[in-house]
Length: 250
Length: 238
Image (cartoon, rainbow over all chains, first blue to last red; front, side, top):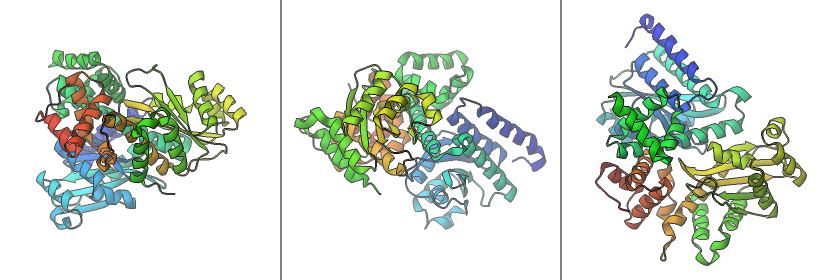
């Protein structure tokens, strides 16, 4: 972890990076993915993820600091059943659980799965704009202690940036815009999963590697992640091109 | 107004599996959706996967709905068209608002003359699988407060239409398991769908239908079947 003073340039970079992605036509899922990555670099956490509401009271996984199936499962479990994220989403307030075994009664399934992966402390911060709680930012630590108050403030600031990016505050986030954005984003996430499946089979790699490949190609060709993913699923030639590109670079 | 998702999904699935009545599936679905939502009418446009310019089957809860659907596709513009292209809902509480008139100049003019004041268009989709769009319309201006209910109806219609492919066999009996919607948020199901479509060279819509049909036939959770396909433990053949 960086100390507050050495961290400042990195912090500035993080906000500029996120702000940069928010220009017209920005790639929301890529932004969320970067943001999760920034959380791990800037805060003393081992993993981070963003969950987003579908407008019907359910949560879906938007992005994770790495796309390994095991970690994704931990977010998925919370979206489906129980865990600090769901509590945070329902109350709109931060949830902190230090020393996870002590929370076993409240979230038995979540605690077991988190422990298996070596996590001992978890924070869930709300992604909120006025009365709308649109999702949560989830932070996992391997140590048995809470993040510092300063780190928590910073985490919340990052969650707020994500919220604004998702709702594109222009039009003052009419509730219609909120629903349109959230539904579109969740479907983009599904498209990316479908594309990960296509690439993993065609390129004989894990779905985790497939995501890295997809993201690498999107960046170097200036494509939006979801648009590239759609092309990969719909068109075998596009899938081949993406795989070929990786082949030539490795 | 709460919508009982399971009951609605069950009712919709009965409609789509009602073999003799198959001709008017869109009309019946629209009337069922209309009954579940506080709107003046519901229109449904179906798309054939892999054929973006393919023929559209139109259905609506009433005559006005049929007209609304026909205009949009005749004119090539309107909330329904935008929702399908963008892959997200397009909610227009006031069709005569400046923003709406600029976006769909011809459609909004037609709508005004027919007394349609608001349209809420929802794509029926699972990732890349685009089935169609459901339009809800009202003769009065104002937001759709029952948005969660509308999204539940959209999910139910989507699954009901997906079930057509799975249950279109002779001895098709809609089972409760088919109405479970939880798989829609599960990454592994979508990954396996993509993997199967690449492996067998079939469209993603068909790949999802194959996975669901297999899970249905062997009474296994779809998640498990999907994980087995991804890991190579299970091979579905063409």
